[in-house]
Amino acid sequence: MENTETIYRSNFKVGAYSFYQHLRLNHPVFPMSKETSNTSWIITKYDHVKELLKSPSFIKDQKKLFSQSSREDMNEEELNIFQNMMLDVDPPDHTRLRKLVQPYFNPKTIKQMEPRIIEIAQELLSEMKHSKEPIDLIDDYAFPLPIIVISELLGVPVEDRNKFRKWSNTIVAASDNGAVDFQEDVEAFTAYLTRLFEIRKAEPKEDLISYLLQTMEEEEQLTTTELYSMVVLLIIAGHETTVNLISNTMFALFEHPNQLSKIQLDRTLIPSAIEEGLRYYSPVDFSTARWAESDMELHGQSIRRGDLVLASISSANRDEEKFNNAHQFDVTRNKNAHVAFGFGIHFCLGAPLARLEGKVAIEELLHTFPNIDLNRTMNPPEWRQVFLLRGLTQLPVILNQTSN
Image 1: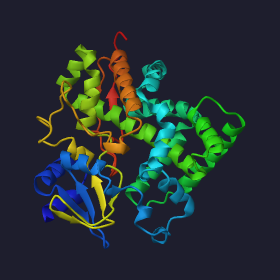
Image 2: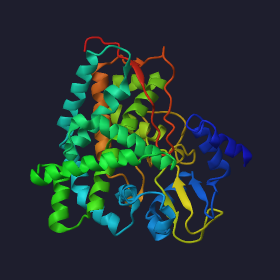
Image 3: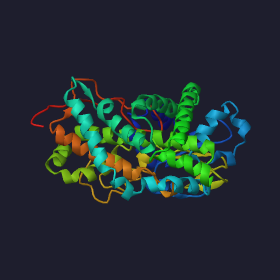
Image 4: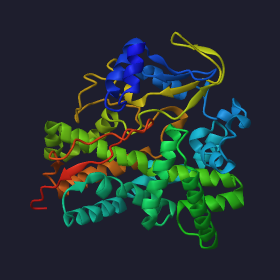
């Protein structure tokens, strides 16, 4: 076990896939830490991950297990932001909250957004044409595209997108490390939304925030704290994972020039390249937290009530028992039943939007800059040291502009 712990405590993202493979073979239900009376577990095999994600025996709402006083180190405002999110509740609350926003994220509604997403992509690419190299594909393209899309959907001023990025980075870091001081950013985010909600109440528009405010006032299906949590979640989840989807997939293509050549010759392969990018470099490394509702046995391990259990999405998506040549990046892969968007009732609400944004982003990028390549004169891209997510800190590229 000492070797496993050493691997884990080293530069986690760099050696992660070797670590996952080691766990799948030797410790598929792995006790990651035991600092209190409860143990934290990582689940790594594909079938076990799907079992965990759909099992009602593992719950999302920790208030059912732990007293509020045990978290008195966090103020009420911080708790409201995190504990009323749709991700962190169980049925029937989860069912109610998801049903409220589902119409905005169904595939038919999302498909109608495609012309606008194309327009946004083309505007960003036009700006890149006139930018001085080197270009960071994340700052100039992979980040602004999804944040503009989700901002317009919600009814949030697009010009404030860099504020959301800062607040989002702080909140994501805090979800990894409780020592991170995020109170100032949470307060700023909350104050910002309070002002925005007041404006939308006075002047409703055809956007999701106006709809949620109307639902809260007229149908009473949403509490005030749930409203704040819902909007924070949609802003963060609406761009964080899609940034990673776009940049991770392009990075994998740069790492595998033969695969990039395939989709340059046949653009109909782009949807399958997106699915392979989701599998190969999953934007979300781990599921959000679940807790064992009662004592149980799980594949040879004794899980106690209140134990934290995490599903390794990235490990499941590289499971040799599920995927042929699991460690190869193949844009022509068939039957790609990855779990990058989760599984069960918490399956990612924004999956149709993320897939569409990824497809449009890569189609338009390769159309505009068919000779784009990684800037190999710079240091290799590095992974962000964020436990739950897999994303790059930057992605420097050379555009190699030609006829387009």
